[in-house]
Image (cartoon, rainbow, N blue to C red; front, side):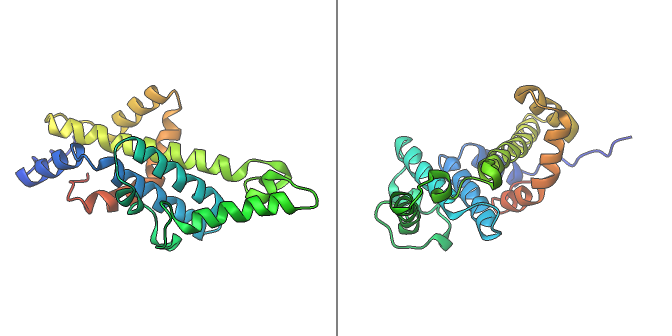
Length: 199
């Protein structure tokens, strides 16, 4: 017999509504994404150049969606520095350094210069980035589905949400569940910062 879930408090309902309807939700998500990439960079799983490309992409896409450069720079991990020229200086330096290495190398190889070729020309860092994006999307989607259900006073179990995400994304339920198990603690921590009920 399943345990009866406690009803949401007014404060929890308000926190969910504020988060779901927050006009800056995309900024919050961008910051979470870039912070997670920076953690991978610090752990030497992906190169700085890859983070730099993602920073540029985030700022470019954000400006196209109506956010200001100043707002978008707040999403950039502080470990990348504070001096800017409309984008983080360290991101520009990483790209310039890679470009110079490519241009002046005796045997130029773009993949080598930009640090995105894995061993034996495998696309390891890019593959890891794609996996990271997918796993985080699956996890966020599970939380979004469950929060939406709670707002409608419906019960949606993790297993049901996993199945729905797997159907939507045409992947196995095991892949979605593994991603959820892996990334849940970080999402719980991030959502708790916004006063969201997590269970």
